[in-house]
Length: 270
Figure 1 (cartoon, helix red, strand yellow):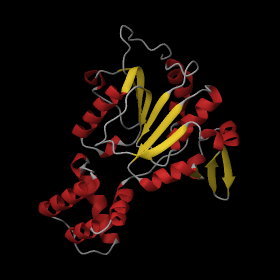
Figure 2 (tube, rainbow, N blue to C red):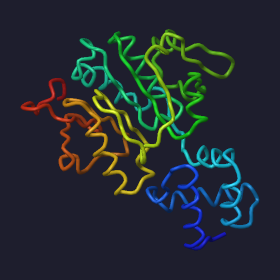
Figure 3 (cartoon, rainbow, N blue to C red):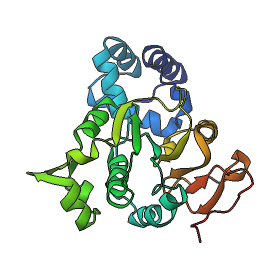
Figure 4 (tube, one colour):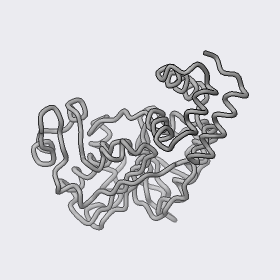
């Protein structure tokens, strides 16, 4: 099946009208390949049939958005970056002296938000607030349950696993102590207005699906959402090549800081 430009336009328009999601801001090759796969999985004959099906109910619209979200994550994914978080980034942010305001943007099912909650409770206990937002309601529901698979916990250090996770069959669940740090709600990074004053924003393995223009606009919005001295943490395939043009500085790979006035040096970076 090879939909033409007019069919894609009709589909993009109804998605935006029904959900507010602007598919023009996503990389077209990846998005269209995944959409065609969905059409075929429903044994529909054309994209126009899928467009009609999509418009028929909120259930269908949620199914599409959930399928479009690519929820690949793990607790303590890229362990070396979490070591840097503990030894350099969180001390830089003063986590030992005050409560941090943190946003896990595009949080999926909450693996990174829960990882940070474990670290803060273990190493920097305080009145920290971690908000996780995502467009995928099913993933958010899982995040609220604190539910993880065997593969999700493979990088969790033993002392964290024994303290913050409990096993039930083949699943693992976050213990109640983490709930005081965590809040999850639905959000659209490409459409929402952002809160401000964040100490740390984590947005990892999300923007790789966006166009270059959408990525740059999102990074600008993140910059404005951070307090001076706040830090943006991105995925290991998402280096921000024009970070200086956006106003950031950096002391560590994949961590970008909104500079403090009159202070351009990271205390803990080397």
